[in-house]
Amino acid sequence: MITISAFQWVPPFAQGVVRDLRVRWALEEAGLPYQVRLIDPQVQASSEYRALQPFGQVPIYQEGNLTLFESGAIVHHIASRSEVLLPTDEEGKARATMWMFAALNSIEIYFQNLAEIDFFYPGQEWGKQHRPDVVKMIQTRLGELATCLGSREYLEDRFTAGDLLMSTVLRILRHTDLLDGYPTLKAYKARCEARPAFQRALASQMEPFQQRQA
Ligand SMILES: N[C@@H](CCC(=O)N[C@@H](CS)C(=O)NCC(=O)O)C(=O)O
Image (cartoon, rainbow, N blue to C red; front, side, top):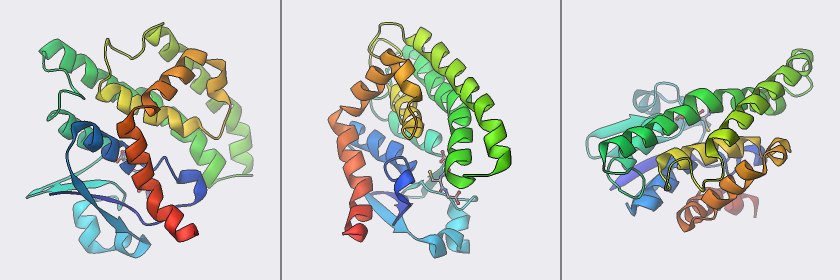
């Protein structure tokens, strides 16, 4: 049985964007059953968990003797087992993989800069000074991504793991109105999120948070 790790609880700003969401979504798309190990800060800091995830983060993926960390690598591993996520032809597979890397290496890092300023260092002088440049860079990337997408439904001619990662990355901006300036990207994100597998993944991440808040 596949086991992934996730947080027992996170503050509301992080609920629905914690990176185990990508892994849950990929597993749901692939139709692979899994169980979740919910962890707290104590487990996160333990040497047992650090031996599995050197940075003490979620998610990890465990199956038999295999333990993986890094959500992108985990989604790729799952995708390699499901045609729903990765085409089987070599070119299609390579292009979908390219989009996975683009989401994480060329887009997410800029969005994450904004999330750091807004959620982890609110009110800090350096953040206030730096924020306009961070927003400008994000707008540049959003414009470039919108150009690539054009009038297509997905980044390639069908949904792939590249779209899965790209749309979860776009969710990082949900506390802003930045996507409003890019209606095709907004519709693209909504299209990806409308997939039943995404809805199941989101509901399963949210469940323990809602239980604790009830
Ligand atoms: N590059 C890693 C980042 C993982 C990551 O940032 N996880 C966050 C939750 S979304 C976390 O565990 N944060 C707690 C911490 O860093 O202590 C991945 O994609 O798996």
